[in-house]
Length: 385
Image 1 (tube, one colour):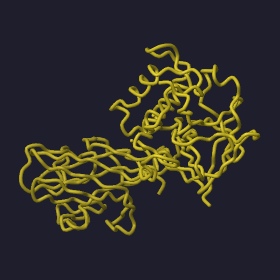
Image 2 (cartoon, helix red, strand yellow):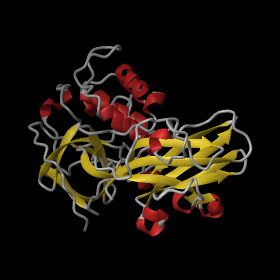
Image 3 (cartoon, one colour):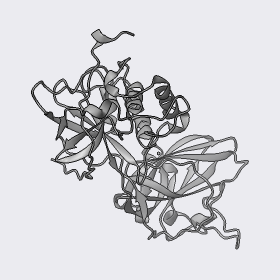
Image 4 (cartoon, one colour):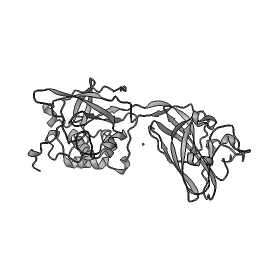
């Protein structure tokens, strides 16, 4: 079983179960993964990068199963709008602020019992596996693609802040907003939520669903939502844990055309004079305009791929007489610096002495390009190598 280190969050609030509304009574919810656009950066970098870099892990190692225990609700939950979450639960003996993930099932405590304890599977809300659980019913979510918006919502500390709609936000507003973001089957009266107002909920959903929050990822000191799916016909729940930035090492990285076009690549070491250099990296010959996919390798000394780490890819778009680059870096790695060269010569020219150079600080992207050109992608990629 994988090992999970959970931060203990002590809470003194009354606990509650998640309930499904009785419809018969009704009268009427990106660093760790780096993505960046290439740009000209005139900082000169040595091949050996000693500086550390800080990354957060949005998909930490988690155990296959955990036990959660939920006690019956306290009498004050209906009026205490300033509670930090909808309820608390204990996980492996630690207290956590918690939220209900959907309303298709419930976590009702059987009559005569003070609590209910369940085994369940636990996932990061950024685990792509959750996207496969789209649907209705226990362990499924109607809109799992909105878990990034739920993370944004839970990192804004809205409870107690004044809304523009009507009064301050309550934990009930947050809970209802979570359901509206990821669940289609939500309650209408929601009597068990305590103080809440749909106008405030609508405002929260609108704020969360802003285009600026698409693909939101929490950072150092923020909260990460974890999803627990209990065994049996019970409702899934959300807890949060604080993220800590982890110091990691950085490596020099270069791009090379993928295997299907590997003949376009030439290692600096294999260039003919005056372009030959005793340092690794690739210049890539693009025969004409178009979009090319490069693999990004870090630490591949002497251009030996077996020594390096494949840390992502880059889409190189040669059009309109110039070159743009979009990086897609693998989880666990982040971009610290980017340098891009595009021109007719295999390598750029040092403007100070007119001699060829592969120093990243001298890389520029020419304009007015046409026909056959050469491209070099240099970057500094940080991660847990």
